[in-house]
Length: 261
Image (tube, rainbow, N blue to C red; front, side, top):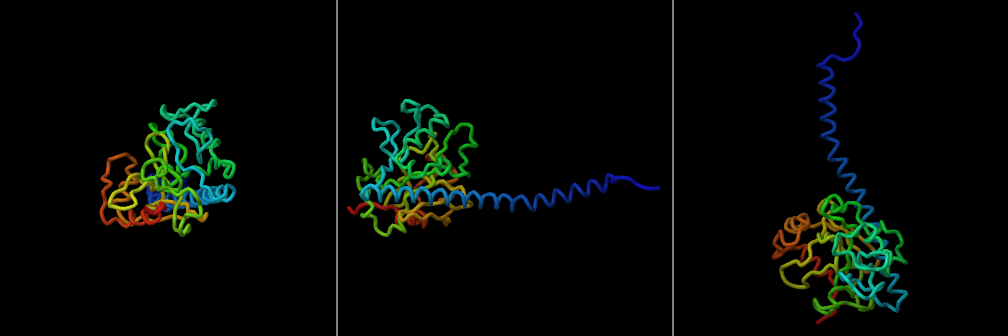
């Protein structure tokens, strides 16, 4: 008698084999996906770093303002602007819409040099998956690069490109995961001591992407689990920022450009 189809036992065996294969393949697929996102992220920061460098070249070595105040009477003054409505009214304090955030990017001083809004976002930025978050831009400028350190944190920010020592070792752009709805201000770190100020965003398998003052970008692997815990928490104050002898903190302090005291 000719038999058609599978028996129940054979079907269960096939299903079990498929499940085993999926269990083996899924981690590899996730890793490949993460690596692809990281490649895009590195490309994004290279484009932004070159745009930042070109702006300085075309403006007598003056750096674009890297700070983004929550509300300002100086429109079109910063590398990107805060989220805003069509008339320029600030909307960042009330869960801004995606269009408000994109409008702020388009009205920034760097947009003529980097006109693709997707270049301002890491594709693995997890905040868009959180219903309480509506963030789009994934990158911030370091406060020492004509950013927040100009306005009161240390008042030692570099404002002219020629003041930067070893630009290939001084980062400009950092992946940041501000949980206040959008990346406010700029990214700052204590230039000395044992504590972080702003946490890093770590979206690439214990790595983050940095963009440097000479126009290149790269992935940097974090060595200390405390750094990864702080970056993975993505909340303000949930993890201790006092981390003595952290090699990652030392690395970021060395790459943080300020004028000498």
